[in-house]
Length: 203
Image 1 (cartoon, rainbow, N blue to C red):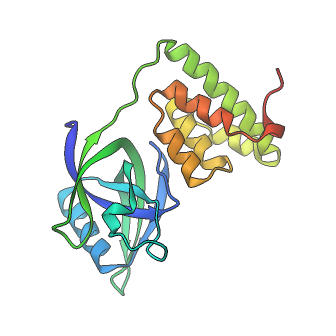
Image 2: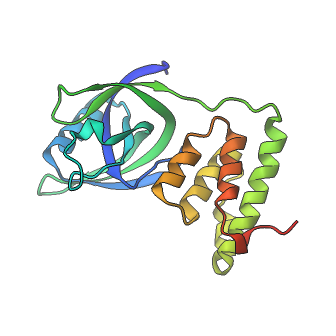
């Protein structure tokens, strides 16, 4: 996959998609039906970006009210309903930065540059240790559901970070802070910092 690409954008309020996360969406607006038709025909992903200012409180056009950081969404399943709406399921891929918006379609589109995580000097062992620490905190935070969480938690530190981002009581801003971390170890550390105090491991 090239480092730069043009993708349709699906802006959502209070949603930050992480790699490997599964997200159900209901597509009902005509412009997003058009977006879905393009994605199904081309087989290409689209981008999920967070709406940071709402139309009700800002006169700015949509492209000036969305985050310039997002995540590719790969279509896993689509079910079209009789009224033309669709229920779809997407899986998060790589994060990206928006370089330039394209306003030539009914839906928002953009040229984006993929933004892979940089390697950390401490290496994969530190990532594994941090991921285990984070999982232990999650198990304390959700003690009643600990067996199910333990069984479903991914072993891969990248996916464990995404798993934790979905389970922690985070604001959209906090999730985006974790998404924009420069390295995986930084992302894990940020998420550990967001664990409520009562669930943190005692040193």
